[in-house]
Figure 1 (cartoon, rainbow, N blue to C red):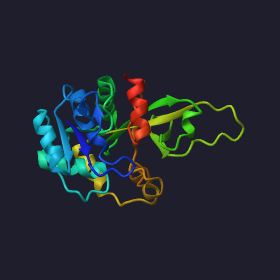
Figure 2 (tube, one colour; figure 1 turned 60 degrees about the vertical axis):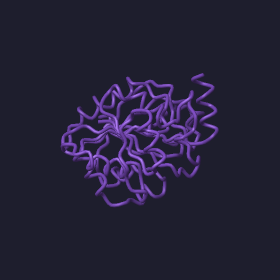
Figure 3 (tube, rainbow, N blue to C red; figure 1 turned 180 degrees about the vertical axis):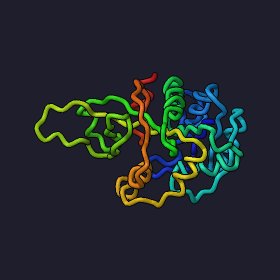
Figure 4 (tube, one colour; figure 1 turned 90 degrees about the vertical axis):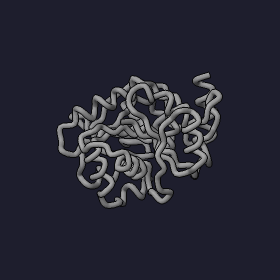
Length: 236
């Protein structure tokens, strides 16, 4: 099951999920990109988005406006959908209208490879040292077992001597089983999560493993109007 959390009141780019992407609202373009992979549901918090989804034949579930994160929102949608505990849930952000289907399929496979009782997975890609300086692009460092060590908006690791060029950018897609998603949302809100404004650090700080997979992708999340302009030029 693919769930797209669709919060209308984005702080950096208000109403961005309604921005026009080649003739369709961003959230609809994203849903249409992935809906052939698995059952797709938009978890929204606004009647306008509900109507949009209905008009375009996309299933949507109304969720509370009070959720602190997109993951909390999809957890409510999963419970409302009646999904079984072992069902794989993929969180695709509404601001990924150019995501490749092969990338989402890779995330499904990575969740299946999780060998811990807590099953959470995500993706990363190789980036340049220059790109790693962008604080809007989340970086991740990985251990030898392909688990995430840490995520940061800063450039990590710190290259004291110079010459390091193995930087990785995090893709904001997550996979869980329904039971692990529920467990994640029950974890205490963490200091690291609050400081970096990165919800995946809630799992890291609680000692949970996040299985990671390396992918090649041209897509990226659209967080600002500048991102939108860049994306439209790149995928024109």
